[in-house]
Amino acid sequence: MADHKDCNALTLDTEARPDARRRLLSIEGHVKGILRMLDDDGVYCVDVLKQIKAIEGALAKTGDVILRAHLKSHVTTAASRGDVDQIVEELMGVLKYKT
Amino acid sequence: MADHKDCNALTLDTEARPDARRRLLSIEGHVKGILRMLDDDGVYCVDVLKQIKAIEGALAKTGDVILRAHLKSHVTTAASRGDVDQIVEELMGVLKYKT
Amino acid sequence: MADHKDCNALTLDTEARPDARRRLLSIEGHVKGILRMLDDDGVYCVDVLKQIKAIEGALAKTGDVILRAHLKSHVTTAASRGDVDQIVEELMGVLKYKT
Amino acid sequence: MADHKDCNALTLDTEARPDARRRLLSIEGHVKGILRMLDDDGVYCVDVLKQIKAIEGALAKTGDVILRAHLKSHVTTAASRGDVDQIVEELMGVLKYKT
Image (tube, rainbow over all chains, first blue to last red; front, top):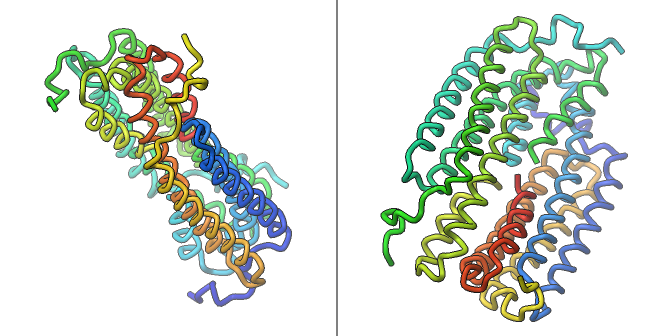
């Protein structure tokens, strides 16, 4: 079995990139916003927690954009390419973080 | 695109079945165990919570068994079969529950 | 600090019990339902995954019933009882499973 | 029941603040790192997914810092303060995001 990471074909889809980039820039701004909240002496814990949960949701959606692109471009083509075991175990490893 | 649910090929792998069955029988016993805990007047909330978390972990592992079988048998072959969009959106729908 | 597990007061609230019991009985039936699905040669992986996710949701709701009772009866009273550190670390340990 | 948000006592613990701040600054840098990854034409989807999962883990730990401070300073004292229902429902709302 070839190491599929050396294969130029297995790169992140060009349509998914600007979407992921836009979402990550928004997340970066959101993180800076929480840092500003922490400068406020009167900030309430639960308000900080809500913002952290909101970022977790935004990150999960960014992950979905990448995951969908990976499934479409690389996972559904694994049988014809011949690296089924490698691509499945790698994907299971990443999805496990979700549980 | 053919409705892949009518396709006999897309059924749960015969090797994954006994593994999933064994895990679900163990989960059934575990649920009965928590029901018995609730009959004990002196049961402590956190001990019940720990058992519920343990079952959640066991269910997640059962899901992994099914998911791995699905990826290997049906998702990695979608391009050659010709139902990529259908199989990807369906899978994204199920994985979203995990977040 | 007294070991709060020896304290009779820290037992699962009597109102939460029948609710948790009812939910767990329903979950037990749901697990049996998945076991029957696995006996069907033509069962589709994604349909099994959906049922597993449904049970995970039902278990999480059962956990919420117990957690709310624990917070109300035992966590919010920890300062007056004098076991704050113990009750907080124990709760953090259980909540960590959720991430 | 008093609106506890008007109460000066319910502000984020001063010890938890620098810890949360340090973690969020590190997360901000991590997000910038993923943005740079996306500029690389040859980037592999799964490598991006792994970084997103790593940030999710770092955010969850930041949330734990805030949650522990909230439990110690505000939740365990609710009975003596007299806002048990309010503080419990608010906390359940935030924890639900975790499931």
